[in-house]
Each structure stands twice: as C-alpha cells, then as structure tokens.
Length: 71
Image (cartoon, rainbow, N blue to C red):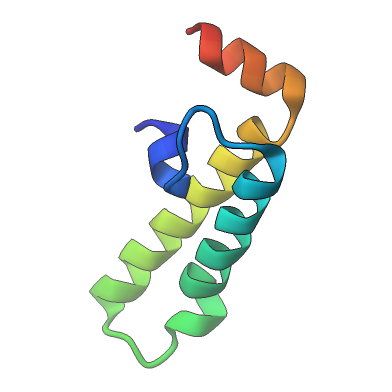
C-alpha cells in the first residue's frame, strides 16, 4: 500500500500537511477509540492504525521519505 494514500495526502504534501493528516487519522483509529465496536471492526481499526503509524514514520523523516520516493 502506498504511504501517501494511507495518510490521504499527495506526493507533494508538505511536512505540515503530512503531520496534520497523521494526527487526524491517529485520533480516528486509535485503539482506545475503538471500544464499543465489534471485534472485526476493532481488528480492522488496529491494522489501519499500524499502517498509519508506519506511513508517518517514513514520510515524516526527510531521508526515509527520499528513499521511499525513489522506489
């Protein structure tokens, strides 16, 4: 999966746009926010949360982002 797509930003997004998208999504998919959901929805939410965190780790670091963009 594309990290830009995961965060819902374009490949030309600034660091501030990436950070903003990350914070919005992390609040939505945080495991603590998933209580009250069905077990399947919780599992899906946790997986999405992990993808969001991984995407942000790469796209927020300039050197990792540059290496990712060259792939």
